[in-house]
Image (cartoon, rainbow, N blue to C red; front, side, top):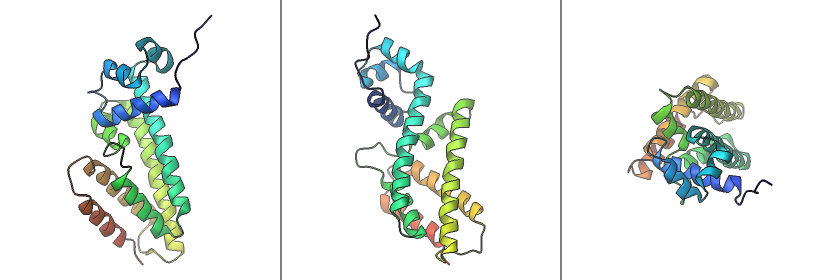
Length: 192
C-alpha cells in the first residue's frame, strides 16, 4: 500500500518558490530545497520531479499568487490612474515579508538567455502583463484620464519595461523614494 503524503503540496511549493526567489536557480541546491521545504528528497522527486521541474512549478505558483493579488488590486480601483498607481506601488513595495524584486524578473536575468523553457514561460507572462497594462491604458484613454496621442499598445510596452526595471532595482539597495519617483514620472507620460 502506498504511503499518503504527509505534506500539503502548495505549502511546500511556496517554500521552494521563496527560496528560488531569494537565491536564484543556480545558487539553490537540492539540499537547500529539501531543508527549506521540510520534506524528504525522495518525496521531492516523486511529487515535483527534478530541480528544473520544481523551479518551473515554483514560477507557475508565483505567477498564480502574484496575478491574483494584482488582479484584485486593479479590480478595486475606481479609475485607470488608480489601477496603475496600485500596480507601481505593488511593484516597488511588494509585501513586507517577501524577498525583494520579482521571481520572474530575476529568472529572466539569470536564465532566459540559456533556458528555452524558462524563456518561453517568461515571454508568455510578460506578454500577459503588457496586455493587462494595455487594457488599463485603453480604460484611461476612454475616460479621458490618459492622452490618446500615443498608441495604447506602445504605452503598455513602455510601462512594462518600467515595471521590469523597477522590480530589478527593488533587489538593490536603491531607495524606495527613488523608485516611486520613477513611477510618478512614468505616469506623467500618460496624462491627458
